[in-house]
Length: 156
Ligand SMILES: [Zn+2]
Image (cartoon, rainbow, N blue to C red; front, side):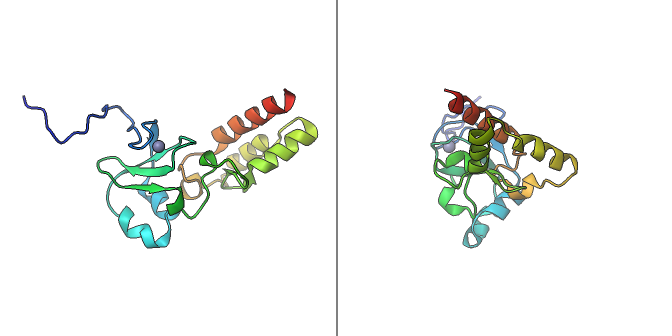
């Protein structure tokens, strides 16, 4: 049995590692990629299977699983909240909540009602994460994480 010389030595796991930061990623649909990249780049996203890199420090947003092509934060029409450290930092794309909304609420009241408001809007079927969120995933996990981080730092 011969080993193909074309592999670049990456681990073959369920999820692909980002070729730039070697971090974990998750698959993203072509629909999401096509909705997010700038119009002049659409043709580059017509083929290939892409994954989303969620690492904060990594400029790569989408990378091709079986290839070398990638799209960076500059190639997208929207700001990628998980990769931004300056406002505006989008937290919830469907309902338009930014990290600053969470921050203001927590500093004013010590509480965050936004995650519960998002939950009820999701229950009403009003979310469109595959179309609006660059990760293609529901934003609620990230919103809760952000709310917890802000609450912790406001108490210390
Ligand atoms: Zn990366």
